[in-house]
Amino acid sequence: MEIIDPRTLVPLDIDAILTSVAKTGRILIVDEAYPVCSLASEIAANVAFRSLYDLDAPIRRLNTVPVTHPISPILEKAMIPQVKTLSRRSGT
Image (tube, rainbow, N blue to C red):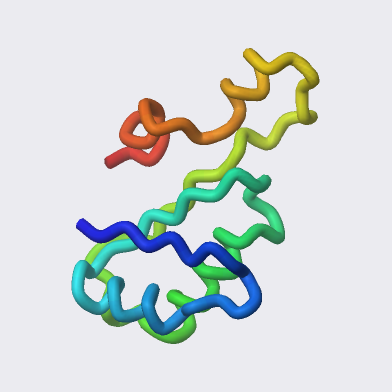
């Protein structure tokens, strides 16, 4: 298992991500944005286009729950991916 934190979208270090995919054969992209038009969808598209045959499993994305953004801190925490929910929501 490897963890890559790209830190920036521009420039996106896609080469580091593709190297990791080639080594591990898997990718789980965790992003606090909504799933549509997000960093996770951009990374998934790049991996599918450039490294599809390196994958041993489907590309997985774990995004914020697609609901209206709440004002309550408790509800906000429930919609954003948390460490304790990674295995439950990602199916791993």
